Image (cartoon, rainbow over all chains, first blue to last red; front, side, top):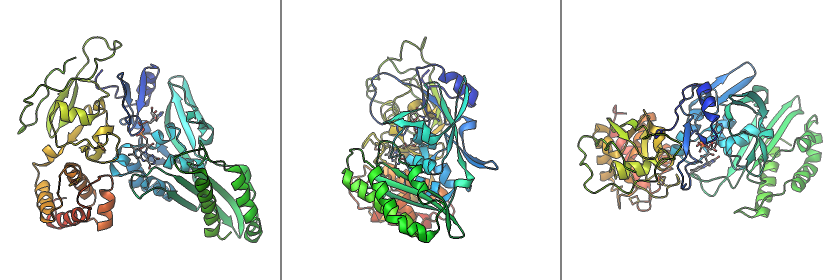
Length: 273
Length: 191
Ligand SMILES: Cc1cc2nc3c(=O)[nH]c(=O)nc-3n(C[C@H](O)[C@H](O)[C@H](O)COP(=O)(O)OP(=O)(O)OC[C@H]3O[C@@H](n4cnc5c(N)ncnc54)[C@H](O)[C@@H]3O)c2cc1C
Ligand code: FES
Ligand code: FES
């Protein structure tokens, strides 16, 4: 069919995905780059009701996978960290088409909204005609550009635990203001209660082949009082320096490692460590 | 291998004089019989397209519908020369598969030109000589329209952000920002 498949409901979309020749397309901003010889049959997700928009449950902020970046920016429900990251994506026209689900599904370590999902420990609802499953976003990335998604599966929604939406630090280093794919990006969360660090999370984009997070290193500072954490600051940075082994890319490895550590250091400074 | 039925040409447009560009490859054997044509609204008129569903909307608008205000600068979403309004949002038509617009609505500069808002933008762009070679201008004007629809009184910084996906090699942008600022004042109440 020339027009491709235009399901309006999730069950129709999932039934159509059972055909291995069908390719899910949300915004097309990744899929339409480059030329293809043979015709591709697209299943368009932009009208699937269950995959659109943001909503709240008692514990989660739920983002439909086919929600565009612009819709995130316009939503009063979207957390500031997500808005900040999304506002740095490309340009208005790309944000009007590109979606959060597509950003995760492409498996790129440079994906700006995926960085946020990683740092807040988001969970993906993945479904097929065979059933559905919940998967922490960290487990979705299998390394390289490989992701844990069968050919008949769709990401339906992304659940951000509200308890994780702590005060944040975010920085994207690009070549220029607009239309810059991240050379490196960093998102950190920091919550303290009565001078004691209760939660700390740090995620690095575009350094390693998947978005980098190391819970073990994060825990070095959790539970400590700020002065104790300050004493460990240099060790903490050194441990990240050892753990962050940049992949080769267009921008030199040494540059990326040192910028990553500078951002981590700045993150700690901003929160008084 | 033919596009059938012939495209509906929006009112006021001259129908294609030359033969259409060689259509892309035939549909895969998997789809039985002739493919169902795709219907959508193009510049306010109903339109039908029966070529490859994964063709770029950019190519379909230019080569099938002869809407040559839609320019091709990069084919990868970087320049904004191919920008059109799809369902009330600015998109780069090089990244939109034709099949995506089924039952939706697409506006190119040819359609937007008929509006009073265009007349205001046209005068403002001319007033600041914001057009030089003109290649970026259709996309730039539609991006201005898309911006003003959502934010009728943008600050210069908001204008720069709103037009940040549209590259211009000639003007240096300042004249364009001034033009949009003027249009937002002169067009009071239109957006
Ligand atoms: C000029 C330009 C600049 C860009 N700049 C940035 C940037 O600054 N930061 C950034 O992060 N990205 C950037 N991108 C990349 C792109 O816009 C994003 O990755 C976007 O989120 C992709 O979403 P989409 O809906 O357009 O994906 P699509 O192209 O529709 O799909 C991408 C992939 O995901 C699959 N997919 C999509 N949705 C689902 C789903 N719900 N379930 C299962 N699979 C799915 C598709 O099958 C495909 O394999 C840029 C792209 C362009 C063209
Ligand atoms: S041709 Fe589409 S953005 Fe350049
Ligand atoms: S006027 Fe020449 S590219 Fe803008």
